[in-house]
Length: 612
Image (cartoon, rainbow, N blue to C red; front, side, top):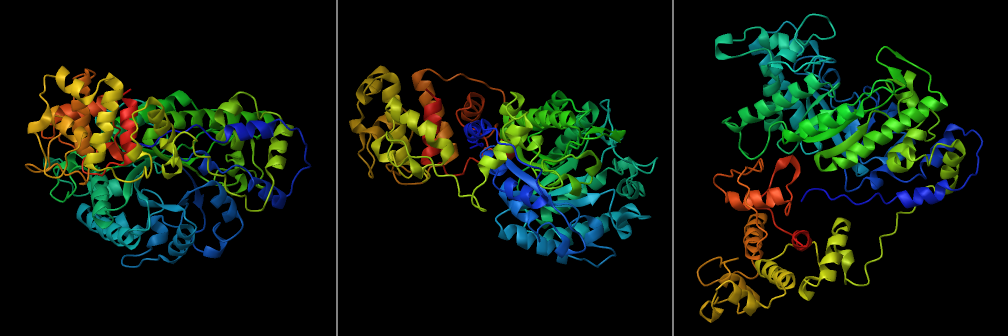
């Protein structure tokens, strides 16, 4: 299922804390760190929406990295995924052909993973910070061989240790305002130094134009080499100024074209999986040059490609592209309002967003430090921006504008140096054993119980995979509740005879026999129903469609819903399109349906609750 969207649990806590008005003196860095460690955890606030990330620094000296001092405590408190700021860029991985240096990155990954934090690989291919041997002065054949050697070596070394890779970084020109006729026309090629891409230049050197070859081909090769080297990693294309209309469309079209090309590639052993699975929106904004509506347009367009989205390098310094300005009190509030608006947007589209990563912890460590772009100042005090991210609606309502209120929030949040975990919500008195379900399923289970269709046999072990027999029991219970008819009345209404002549050797259950006579289900083999056999998403979709036809709620929609791992022409398009368009069943990350994945009890209860 797609990620559920629970309400932000911290809102009420923040409101209560904000009502106090204790003022505090200017704090030292130590005081700021201690207070910020007591604030509600950002990644806990957005649990169920998306991961909340940051970066770990350090390239040549691991002891100077922010994983080696107390800053790491603050990172662990608020973030659950980290990206290497520099340590995994090509110039640090390999300075000469055949020579690779993994020591610094290995130590960082060991520390970060050991703390239970996911790690992002950044980046394999970039026009900047790359070793000379890879592409400078190379022919197409030489560059391709070097690219394969580099990616195969590096990605295989880190295989299984990283959640995803930023495979290609910033292949397009800085600003693309109008939509190009061909996305390749918007790529970095040559000309001025900043826009120059040696990868494009090398691949162009020897390209056979008659065969349609061009300097752009390095992008496809990079993703293919990465997929073959580390099949378990999610592969991202990453870029900035993605909110520009022309650049947005160029990136989207590139993604769609290369993913289509991969479908027919003989090296593709997973035809239902995209090659470019993720699109990274760097999101290096400015307080005086950010239109949130353009960001929303980009999210919507990128989602149409079927790829998942990550906000990969978020920061908002004071000023605009042609210069930084001082972070006055008013400018800091402006900065915070923009953060709040963005996080309202990220929540709205969280089903498409995998993570939101801030590019730095405190202002003084930022690469854009002149504009003070982050959530914490140089003394690790939480800025207005922190509260805007933690509670966007509350911040925009004016709850945290007063510095006295902000300080009171910090004061009230002080407690043990390691805050006690939030207590688990008390289980409902009405539904037994609700603690055996995931939190995002609680409301649906409670509603199903209240409606009266949740069988006693399914009021426990909600995370367990449901069997065929259990699903039919749930289905018939829902049918009886929804139609207010008994099994016999249902059979009579639909002109089905009593089911004495329809038997299975492994069950005589009335619900199973009724479902069989109504053509909702059949046996796994002649004469055998398979009561205790596994039940997958494919079977669920088929049964749900048939049940909705019985109650008259089925609405035919012949348009292909577009699951990336399903050929609708070969796999019961009616069922596929019904569950997709009706939103009775949700897809999974990457636009997949995953028809053979098991179906849980809690998932089954949710789909019937959605049906009414």
